Structures are given as C-alpha cells and as structure tokens.
Image (cartoon, rainbow, N blue to C red; front, side):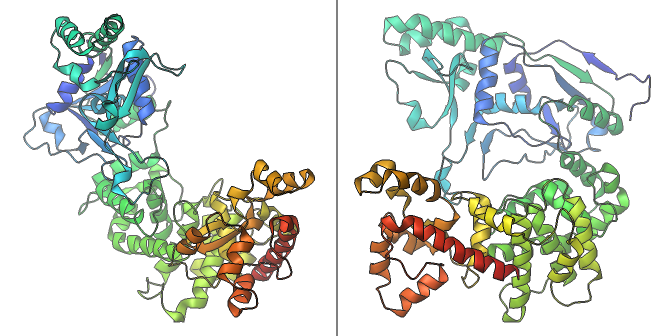
Length: 588
C-alpha cells in the first residue's frame, strides 16, 4: 500500500484517437493485465459510448501501464475480445508475449476500449429474448451499425447506433440506411465520406443529414483525440495493484475475485488459477438445464471446503499457504462442486429456479466429506439421504437463509457438518442448531400462507412445487403449468362465458399464483395448452378411472368439483388447503 506522502509516479501524456487505440490493440501493443475484470458491457452501453464520441462528450480518462521486456514475464496478460459471444466467447484469451519488447497494460479503461474494438472491428452475439440457451441459433452474430438517415428514437441518445445481423442491416428504407460503423476506418480523408454518401444515398433530401452524420463519425473515430490517459511506468506489482484498486473504486465495482484470481495465478505453480476456475465455471454452468455460478462462488467454496477458519472474501485469506492448499485440493474441490450441481439438477433445479448458488455450498461440503461417492445420485442406498439434502435445499431457498451475509450461515452449518457422527446428511442437527435464530429451518403458519404469494415465472415457485411433488422423477423435464389456463383468464373471455363481474377480479388475482399451478412433463403440458381444464381432464383422465384418481391425488386436485370455469374460486380455496396440509406434513 502507498504510505502517507508517497506519490503516484504517473504522467499525463498526449491523447490519442480512437483509431490509434484500435491500431495499438491490433498490432498487439495493448493488453489486459490479469487483475482486470472480464468484459461486461451490454450492446446498449456500447451504443451509448459511440453516441458520446459522436457528440464530443468526454469519456473519462484512461490509465495505461508501460511494462518493459525485463518485466513482461513476471505477470499474466490477456488479449482483448474482438468477437464477443455471450455463450462461447465471453472470456479473454491468455496472451503469448514471448519475445515482446514492451507493452501497454490497461489499468483503467478496459470496458471502453473493448467496446470500441468490438464496435469497429468485431461483433457481439447475445441470446435473443426467450430463445433457448442450448440452441446455437439463439445467438446470431451482430455488428454495430449507424443509421445515416435519422436520429435515434429514444431520448437518451442522439444517434441511432444498433447491433444488427447482416439480414437486418439490409432492411433500408426512407428512414433507415444502415452504415457498418467499422467501415469508417477505411476512409482516409473527408472526401472519402462525400464520395460514399453521393454513391449510396439516392434521395437528395437525405444527403445533407447523411453527410453530416457520417462526417461526425469519421471525425470522432479518426481525427478527434478523446482518449486522454495517464501513463504509469513503475514495475512494482504492489504499487500497480494499489493504483488499480483506487482508480476502480467508483463506477462498476471491481469484484474481489478478479484481484484474487490474479494473486492466485501468480502463486499456483502447476496450474493457471484464472484459466482453471473460468473453465470450471463454464463446465458447471452447462450441467443439466444450465446454472449461473461465477468465479466468486468457486473461490468462496474453496475457502469453505478447505476448512479455513476465516472464509471471508479478503486478500489476506488468499495468502501463499492457503493458495497452495487450494491448489493441492483442486481436483477434490471441483469434484465436490460438480457432484453437488449434478445432484440438484436431478432434483429439477436449474439457473432459472435456483435463486441462491450459496445454498449449494453446504451440499458440496457434505459430498466432499463423504469423499464423493460415485453412485450417490442414482443409488437406492442413498435415496433417504438425498431426500434430506433436497429438504435442506428447498427450505434454505424458501426461507432465503443465504441472503444478506452468507458467511453468517455457512460457518455454523459447516460446524454441524464437521462434527456430526451420522453417516447421513444431518438435517435434524441443522434444524436444532439454527432453531431460534433469524436463519432457522422451521415454518410458522404465516410463512406457509405466504408461500401462496409465489407466482408463475418466479424462481422460488419451483422450490414450493418440488416439495409438493416428492414422487416425481426430476431427471425428466417438467413444466410449471396453469391448471386453469392463463389464456382463458382475460377479462373479455371471462365476461363472454358468463363469469360475474364480482368474481372476475378474484380470477384475475389468482390464476397466475401457486394454487393454480402444477408440474407437468413437457409433452403433456404442450398437449394441454390452453384447453379448458375440465375438457382436458375428462379427455386425458376419464371419470371413474384409476388414472384420474392418481392424477388428482398427485396434483392436489379436489375430488368433489365439476372443474368448470365457474368453480374456479372454490377450486382455488380447496386446493390451497390440500397443499397447506401437504406442506405441513413435509415439514413435520
């Protein structure tokens, strides 16, 4: 750390243009030190940045770190991302700097420079709304374009920058002419701009606007010099880290894991910690229906599973001794985390239904203590044990016990898991340990009543339904289905079938909530679609058959109704009571 009175030896040097910065990236003079976070800006943020450049707004100063050939090998550096892909190319590649003379490390300004690089030389592929994560077609390649014929529609930006596919960019009309922003780098002089506009814009009324817009872009990228930067030449990593932390104290807060990964990478002797952890994060996130863990989760789990007394996210806890232990235990740690997520995937959970990754850490710790039995997930020998783990997980989630400061719960839970003499998951001991605390594992009647406030599309809803469907095989894909279809619950349709005005509000207030939701396998749910419940039920499970009786019992369907739309209010109230009784029995 800097001592009182010590000065930061930075020099403010001549600013450079956006084009010069891009040329330096492409000529491999600019790199990212491993202490940098990864690229996180959205397409909208990139468009906003280019709009600011066009308007001549200041885009804040940058901080560069000059590293000479004698010191390059002491640190890890990464390449800039050019073609960003949300699923397959979101991580920076490690740079091979063998033989390099001197380079420039970007200490402050990585997000902005990467955004300029993507906008001018690369592409941005993100998942389209409501498209499947496991479908490559959900991530079309998009390039940054500028509309030369009109200003932006929104009030925030003046200029209409958008990431478009090639097909979208060809949809020009009287209000749109999409210019590929990167093509501006091919212009040498202002006359090139004029020549392009006169050749491409047919309507003379649009020439003035198009010329003015393209001139501004050309000037902003190639002539103006908006990149003002300080240059740091000190080779001390301690000093550079201190500067880096200070300049990143505002804006998007730097994650501790980014700094800790840099420290770990320097201390691990046999592996690159950053690459190992990032690769492992990607692997876990592909399990089952997909999960959403990050580097912070892995590092926190390492602290817990290695039984370090202090599990706080502090630089002191990632000292040489601790990092050596994590490295030597890496295969066992990753095996435990991996098995824990395979286990909860078998419970039916995925990214959309797991609101807290930290709730999985005690599960990973337990499997780690058991030495990760290979047959744990499928063996009938462990069936009762798996039920206890699932009960622990869903209660943890529904009680939101891992919100706030998770360490306050991870420590006492680890104590129980460490000390238990049982050869099964110590759920009863955990319940006793936490009884009377703010993070307990029991439900009062009021809390049970509150569960019915969960609705379709909410992550916690699956946890409640998972409790109520203990016999389902969640290795099959289940959908959360509206028993009385959502499509039939509009005010106009309810009035059309004769539902009274007094009842319509109840229908509208309750159709999307827990008491009208069930779990159905994918194909039956598709087949059910928007059929009236009575019609679907009578067709699929005819009256008087054992199959109908089984379906009603499994799904908490009252057996004394006629299931028409007019019985909806009675149905909801009776099913709510059946579900409440089942939940109390589960907690019993």
